[in-house]
Length: 61
Image 1: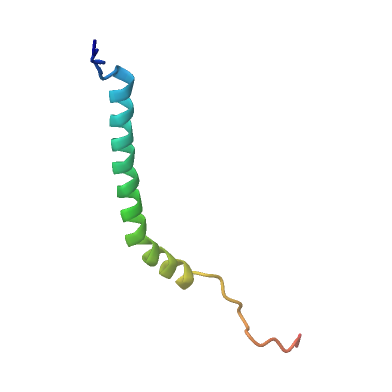
Image 2: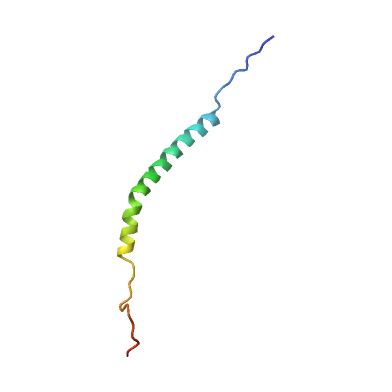
């Protein structure tokens, strides 16, 4: 006698699949935004970095 095992989607299985899909979507959006903005941010930080007043100090008072 052959018995067929019925497979049902559990509430938690559907919830886990939905959450996984949504998290992947959010992470993808964050990575895309970061990859576009990081060059701009680094350029801005390099432009605003603190620089010494005198590059060549002669120790004169």
